[in-house]
Amino acid sequence: MQAYKIKDKAYVNIALIAVNVLIFLYFELIGDTEDTMFMIMHGAVYEPLVVLRGEYYRLFTSMFLHFGASHLVNNMLVLFVLGERMEQVLGHVKYLIFYIVSGISIMVHMGSAYAAVSAGASGAIFGVVGGLVYVVAVNHGQLDGLTNRQLGFMIILSLYHGFTASGVDNWAHI
Image 1: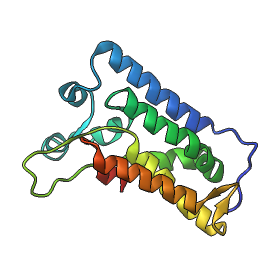
Image 2: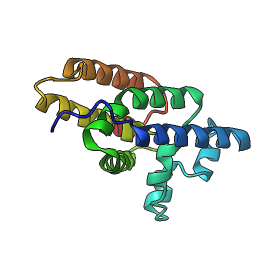
Image 3: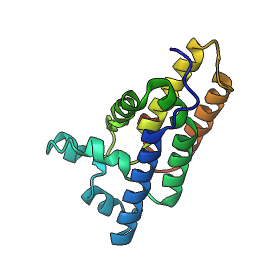
Image 4: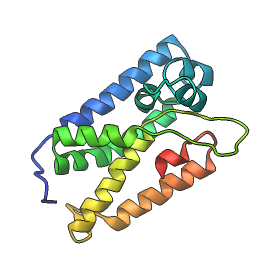
């Protein structure tokens, strides 16, 4: 990977943040984003609906839904900080494709008594983080002040938060 151009604006990343915020605000106006049934009705991933009913669109729509303001703020803060760098490395179109492909995920609960409801940009964001780990590695451990040590610390904190909080799609993080 070649070093990115610092002068390029991360238009796609800004647009993704804006879309996530606007969708969140809209759903807060018409309902409660912390209500699981409301989120299922509006596109969150619920494994039985995806697998048994073929509602595969949920794999896409769920990455723009968030369970409450803190979920949105945490995801958008990480995206704001790291997404810009990844977009500058990949370019606008490739970054958008990379983000969407990373974000399409489903939780599979082998042997569990229930299927969880999943929503949020975590899969896409952790895809961006993983991509940056690669880019930093091929740039000899650093990319414009960003190091693998800093990324590793962020990953550990995010995974710790995911495993200690309830209702988090840790498969999307991993």
